[in-house]
Image (cartoon, rainbow, N blue to C red; front, side, top):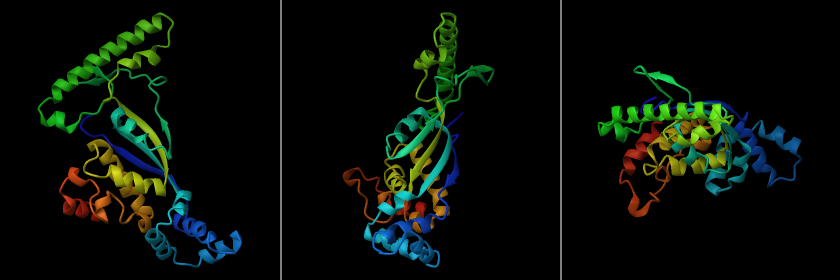
Length: 245
C-alpha cells in the first residue's frame, strides 16, 4: 500500500496486429478474396499503409486488434473511472467473494489501500493510515456479526469499505478504443491515478505497435490542446514527455 503500487502487465495481444489491420482495411477496397489478400499483405510494408489509414481517419480496421492487460495496485476510485470506457471487457476482483481481511501495518491490521499524493504532501499520511485501520476493525466486526447471523458476511460488510481500497482488474481493449482512452486519460487534467495507469498502458502497447501508438497520448501530443480555458498550459512539457515515453 502507499502512494502508488501500480503494476500493469500486457498479458496478451493480437498476433501480427499490423498485418490484421492491413488485411481488414484492404478488404474494404479490393475485389480479391480473403485468402488472396492475406498472401499479398504478408509481402507488404504494412507500417506505411497503416500510417496512411490513420491520416485518412479510416479507423474501423483498428478494432480487430485487441490488447489484454492485468492491472494491480489501483484504487476503486480508479477502477470506477476505468470501467466508464464501455468499449472494453473487464474482470475485476470481487469484494463479495474475496474478503478484505487483515494484513499487517506497523503491528495493526489493515487491507491494502492507495494513498493519494496530495494527502501525503499535506502531512496527513499517518492520519490516513489510522483511519484505514479503523475501517478494517469495523469491517472485521461486521464480517463476524453477519457471519454469526447466517448472512453473507463479505457481501454486506464491504459496504463500509472506502474507495481507497486496492483492487485488481483484467482489461481488454481494441486499438481504436485505446487511442481514445489515451487521448482523454493521459491528459494532465485527468485524475492522477488513471493518468498514471493510461500512460503505462500506452508505453506497453507502443512497444508492440509503434506505427499506431507512436503519436498517441493526450490530444495535444499531435495537435492543439482541446481543453480550451481548462488547459494545463504545459503543452511543450507534455509533448516532450510522450515523445520520450
